[in-house]
Image (cartoon, rainbow, N blue to C red; front, side):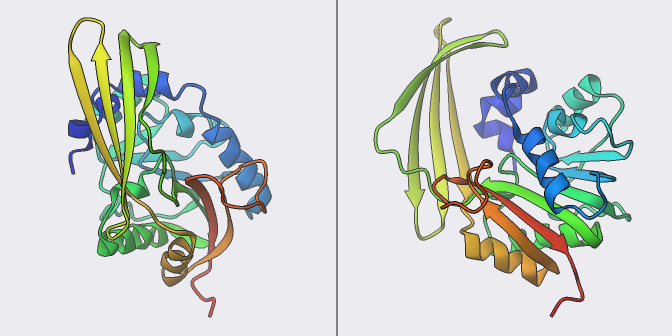
Length: 247
């Protein structure tokens, strides 16, 4: 799985950080931990698919923070930016650290890069392998396709990149794969092309995978300001607690 081959932001970790610098994901996760957690704090945190580890670094109140990502370039960059963190190269489907955590994070559509059902089951087995009873699982992943008919265009001026960016979306209902086609036309005349494929997991699917792995679903929403509202967005926040003895 070579994600960097199809996404310039993964080839350029500094660009990844710059494009997501206004992200509120870490703050949202902290509120979810306060609301749904059982320990009163994030405690021991495992971030699976940590990327550049900026979200993990935001939990400064925790002194036990472990981040894992499949991409060595992202981990190398993250280690340089956040030397206080325990950061490792590893595969969400197979990694076993031999210990449990109070909070497990799987953010940034990490889960969506696993397409076959057996790989998704393997990811949930990894979550369970690092959970104690009561461990809080927070997943941010695509729960609906992005249905935009016309291409969108934007201007990017950051991290040394000066480009016009065109983005299109396509959807394969049979495979549940949503594809982002993105073209970067740089001012220096170069062109970069992204083709990002994500498996959409519909709400009931997420609940089923979690339940089969021993997690009890607690919430699913697309608007962090309205947990009980309709699922109008394409990116879902899914929260569950580990309870392997539940019927």
